Image 1: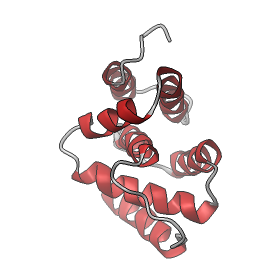
Image 2: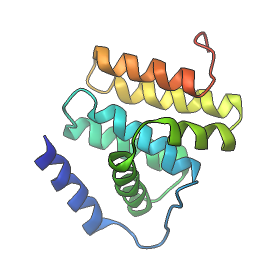
Image 3: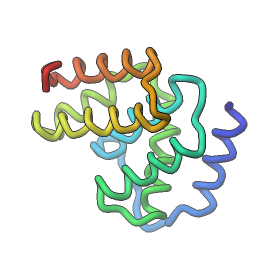
Length: 139
């Protein structure tokens, strides 16, 4: 699994556009780090998940393919270096209003459903992030 992830990240690095860098306090970096965390939580980060992640990042944040790849690469590095999810959810709570945080939760569910089923770890992580974001469970 980690070899596939390294290969994926290497591919991203090779194709990434140097046009934009993403700061640690960028809400997009925080949101994508949570998506990466979710994609990896079930032990598989397959091609369908990588493609869906790429599509989500491009469309939701209005980025080019290269910019999205750079953001995903940076987010994956940040996520792997993180001790917990609080640094990402704190950034999102500071930067986004409730409706925007609901949209992040929607992206997480979209990512979780990529393979057609929700793994119990995925569901648990989405629910935990939802609570950390202060989004009511019924939202």
